[in-house]
Amino acid sequence: MLECSDGKMSEIFFCISFACTLIAMVFSPLNQDNWSIAAAAVAIVTALGGLYLAFQAWNEPLPEDAPPAPESAPRANPADEKMNKPF
Image (cartoon, rainbow, N blue to C red; front, top):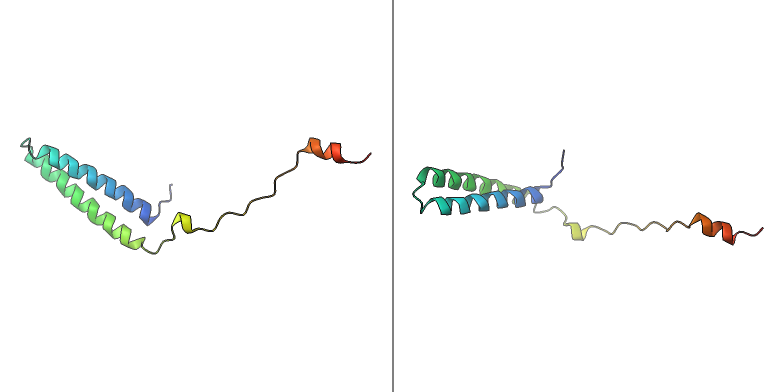
């Protein structure tokens, strides 16, 4: 299963709630009140979940703050090793 941090999940929840908000805004002038209210309710619930996850991720280290990975030494080409060996 995918391992998502709280920060990443809060971004996903934000996108879902933003999309539901736009859907509610489109359905409201079209007199589709049931769909508009349902989309707004989903937007509110996911936004609150996203806020909760965002505050939980407040102290998570950012990816750019991680120390750089140690570089491994480049491997020599076996053909070069044969050419550099004395007879």
